[in-house]
Image (cartoon, rainbow, N blue to C red; front, side, top):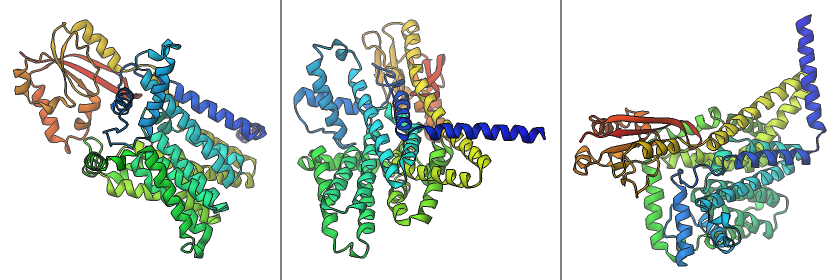
Length: 516
């Protein structure tokens, strides 16, 4: 009897907590979700600065700084479209104008910080858009749930700290979904143009998300059904609008088509199709593992539940919301050999909306079965959201705590004699050129031992984020592992610094002294 009473008391207390949450207004809850999400993304936002530890950020910053300096708006860099580069250019021009009055804007690393803050703004905008979509799809609490699923996401929080293109691309994809649902309700030429513009915006952030256009096509078919072919001119307006916005943000795709096609094909298409060391192979299953067994697994499982229920109840809406995640997954899994979990991010607004429907489904089922079931559902949902939130908060905390490379740099400066000949590979600290004779190699094994002897290299600095990818899969990378072993055969490890790197545990910087 005592056990039953305790269980009832626990169920009652959980039920009371549920009722307190329900007593809040959705607007208040949304403000809380937004505030928490922005706080998470600002926590650790200055990570590493003024050092550019994230290897992709300098490409975007470098292009924007060069544009501001010489006035040439041709990026001469085509790994990404130019939306983010032009946005940075505007920010840097404003910084230049305001710097005399605000000296802090002249501090080293501010150019990176401004770009990261821009991505935080995109992130907040994404939460607002998924809230609006969830509210229109179901109700305001569903909108809050959708925003909370994105706001607590580890992956979305991670990329919001980085000056790259994934977060603006995700914001653009969320806009496409919102516009497509409005188009479904009111299929006017204006909404077709708006939906197309959103597609163009998303694509001008990241090329591969152009497939999000399929959402507009699905909404068109749903709106007109058997008259879809007759109404194709409306879809044509969307297509023209998307191309116009894309070219407005990336005009040199046309103005310098030869340069664009040459570099884009070599650096994006061939690279993606042939692989990236340490991030290749087993692509389809790896993405599924990241989705359903990774830090954001609650989002994926709730989306699966919500998608199944939405398909049963409102199959047309299910098709519109789910079509892009399915096709984009197929694109990543079949056309690419390269796999990075960040590539999944543009699907998150869609998964969040489906996940919010999953939350509503669980709550509805629980309420229909009584207080104990409601309390159990609230516990499960709270744990799921808490799991995501914990992973996201841990990442921000690790960023804010510093980087192993900072500690390694301090040790090197204190212990490696001035004037020493040093080689460092990727993911290691930049060394002062006025103190050491430094050569930077992306991989230490890009030169053989004979070269090191000929150059009279005295010290070698290795980063686990580089060499670790090979030793983690020695069967696939046996040649690279053997080359590292030959290189280090006569070397002496004089210092190993362990700690977080780029917000992840397990980072390591090794300093070797080479035999004369």
